[in-house]
Length: 186
Image 1 (cartoon, rainbow, N blue to C red):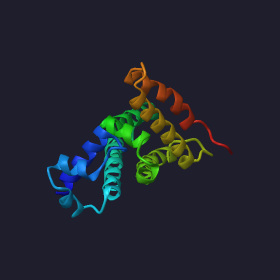
Image 2: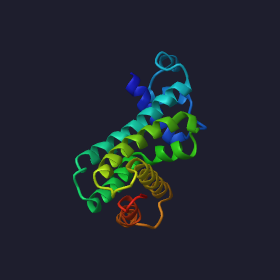
Image 3: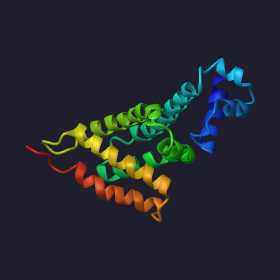
Image 4: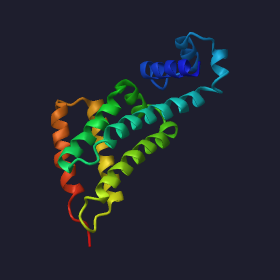
């Protein structure tokens, strides 16, 4: 029943937006009474918190799974895979992504989005630690790289500019690879 409610909540949030997200709409979409919904969730905020946790966890799982098997690749191959993994993970439900980014108050999702970033940053930092030049701070570079790639991925998905996916991935590689592997401060 919880899965049914969460699935319905996700669909309602994506379809109606945050301003019109209500437990009565979710209950109707789930084919249950509002009273039945309240047996599982105290209120709209608790349900929204679960939706955000799952949304970002699923994206994180997809990115981590995509990257985990590629950490032995050379940088020129890994960077496009990181960009592709982020795009693919965030594109899974672009309507919901738009609502999350543009409408849902950050207090409901920022902690979960941070967890996704942290997972990817840890993978990237581990990769850089063995390959970055002497003096480079792998953790800082990983944060910068993941932040840039996430921002570009989200904007490309939401804005849908006249930039083909392959071109975006190529441009991201041109942007981040030189930075990732340049010598650090001594």
